[in-house]
Length: 234
Image 1 (cartoon, helix red, strand yellow):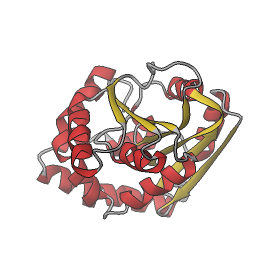
Image 2: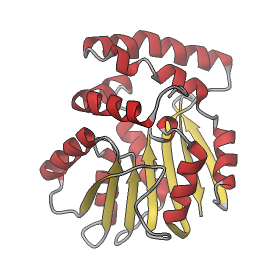
Image 3: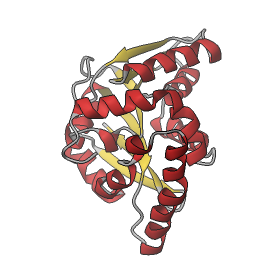
Image 4: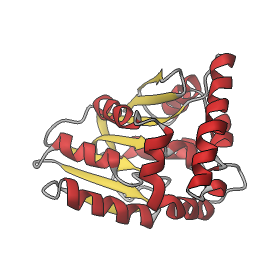
C-alpha cells in the first residue's frame, strides 16, 4: 500500500473485495495459488498436534491447510482485521472441514493478541506487503513463535531481471486490471502493482527478518521470480 493508505483504508478495501476474493485469486494465478499455498505450509514446518497461526488469513485458505496438517490433535488460529473475510473463512470451514479446530479471530498483524512463544509454526499469505509497518509485523511473528520454529510468508515478488519484471507488469495490466474491471473492483485492485514495486525484494526481506529477531532466514522465489516465500526461523 502507499504511505497514504491508513490501516483503516486497507481494512476497508479487504472487506469490500471479500465476496470476490477467492474467485479473483483463482483467475489471477491461473489456479496456481493452491500449489503455492501448499508449498508454504510445507516450509512452515508444522506437524500433527502443533499449535499453528495464519496471520492476515483472509478467506482462510492457508489456515484451512494448516488445520489439516496439524490434525484433530492440533489447533489453528486464523487472524485478520477484515471481518468480512473472516465470515467467509468461517463458512468455508463449516463446508470443508468442520471437525478441525480453527479459531477465527479479528486482530492486527502489528499487535498480535497472543503471548510470547505460543505457536509451533506460522504462515502469512499476501499480507506482509499490505501491512503499514513490515519490520514490526516480522517482530510480532518472531515474538509469538516458540524457539526453533518457523514462519513461511507467501507474497508477490519483484524480479531483478528486467525482462521478467516487464512481463510481470504486462501481466498485471492485461490480466489483473481487466479482471478487476469485470468484478467492478478496479479501484480496489489498483494498488497491487504499486505495492509490488514498493515491497522489499527477497534478499532485503531476509535482512529484515534477521533484524526482527529471527536467527535464520531464506527467500525462495518461483513462478518466474514473480512469487516468493520468505522462510524465517526463530
